[in-house]
Length: 584
Image 1: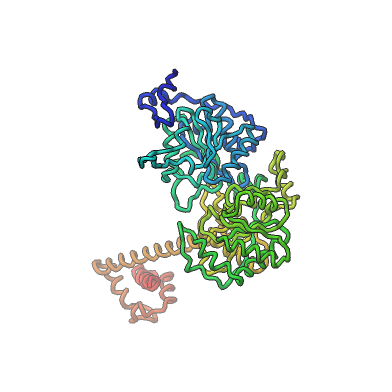
Image 2: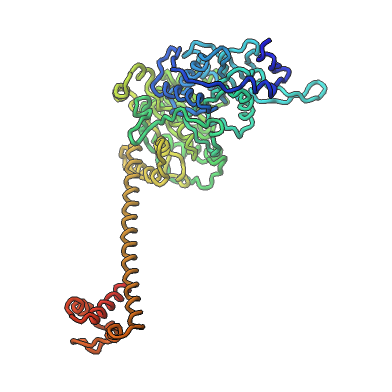
């Protein structure tokens, strides 16, 4: 029996590694990252290859976890599959676990791995599970399934059962967290998994997400202290981005102006509007008309997905559209619909059998349909993450359009010549209390990796975009942000210039006051000439204003005296009076 086998006692026995065996077993070796060679049948995109290279460099530098951020539709699951491929190439003791939080995402990732790597992964979810004695190279698991549970035996005694224990931490695991923004170490269900694999310092973590910001503001840094990829949807400055590189289409922003609706009284949960309150306000027949009529005019024949705050509203929107069209051109879906029926509806929509898919609580994560040409957001949100998830459903180019094209120029040209040059995004505006909702401007601004676009800029860009929408003008959100930023910078520069001028004037006046105070001091304590200055400073002793107080003499005469009098103390007296007047 090997030393490794000797120190592991099996999951059913609740075994643990001893402290001594851990110290000898897990002494950190010197790691030198090797050049990446992929065995997949898919040629990685440039940013995917860079992500895997950086990921393993971070691992070699001792970083235990790293995050890969890339926009919706840019192949995060492929990036994860490529990382899994390289990890497994390191030896027979290397394994990969992918963790997701929804059934749909689990099956989707498993299918992607099999498609890319030609490896059939094991599934650990609900009634499906892998066997400890025949552990597959890759396992895709549900986070909920791996939680520890307490059960009662026939005698009422508590028994702890945890399916996580079957995954031997002696092996070197790469744990890939799909939709990484959903997982934070502060959650016990996450911490339980992280700590299990952390007993082996050779095991590592990888996070995949399009939206690393959490609505509760909890940090992901504990889970993923390193950044392997930060690839954004859009870069206003013209740097690398999915849109600029031809891997995603840009947004064609449109607005539906809905007046007479007040959102001020809406309750909030976790910093966002409550779905039931939203549904109550928006699902009346009158409001449905205000939403659906302009949407139908905007999208024309585009295949559209509509996000709603509630199940009843999703159904009501579909009914309204069908009644308006006189045919079944819209269908609704929600989480209560059986999975088989949902898949059929998705397939029918993707095949073009109907135009409008009205959903509640679905399609925000992991839904892959490049044929979506318009996204209508009937579910206002304060969450930038949720806004990006919903609108990101439409940013994929048409299926197969850019595959095999090597340069950004070729891809951009192909998109420009296609039937989907951009994705139309429809937001609701004009309602009281929606001022701090997440918008497309927030998504574009959040795509600046090296700088922060201020809320003031975003607010001005949104305000101008809405005004243009009211006038029927076309809107380019990126241009609106850039123009707003330039205008605000110009305003600030003008304000700073005025402040500098005001400060210079204040400094000049302060010097004049100091000069006057000096001369007054000289008058009070001086003799001879200083005394004459003091006497002359009170009453004019010459010319046509002789006998008058200096304060009553016209300024023009005093200025003439300063320029022409030959007697110094008289010139000083006139100058002092002018200084006093200027200070006042």
